[in-house]
Length: 95
Length: 117
Image 1 (spheres, chains in turn green, cyan):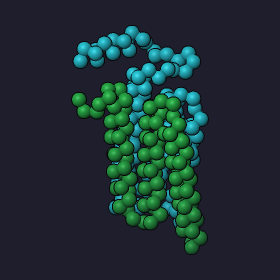
Image 2 (cartoon, rainbow over the protein chains, first blue to last red):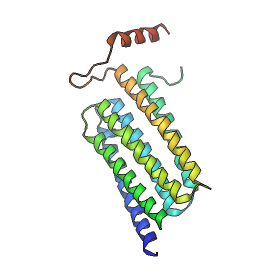
Image 3 (cartoon, one colour):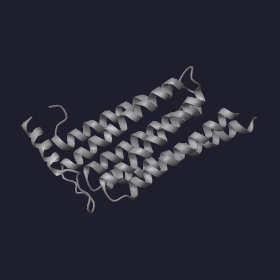
Image 4 (cartoon, each protein chain N blue to C red):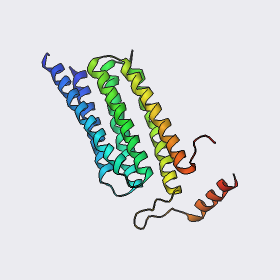
């Protein structure tokens, strides 16, 4: 019985490291991306990865508050994506 | 015991889908293909990790927030991808190979309507 939480702890740590590394890999597309929509797509992927990181951190520390944090991060990421998509077309967000 | 096993399995599935999405983002040749690669696997991976949070915290306290997060992701990620795709087509990012719109006249009338606005 005492081995299983250790296994869960290890899984959570490995998952956190992997998802953080995925964020770094996505930043390659943010910097290098040929067009602006590439950068927006990569930033959207980074935002979703950060949501996953927040949930993993909530499970690891046992603090349920970070689930709410992940929800707020998802909302902010969606609003940022929509705003930048409109900005790429029109050159302005609020007309 | 069973709860821990389910949490570990869901986290493994979620991390796998996130890896698939990022590899697609890095490897695919076009904006539209990259968007196709990131939106669906990233949604599924994060939804699986949210489900792991639901299983870990239980339905009483923070698990309901996790379910709300899943619903929110499934609503917003396709919407955001659609808006990026529309803006990419609008600023003239070319399609790959022989890919075209299904009906060009529909696209043109759509544009002229928005020009009238």
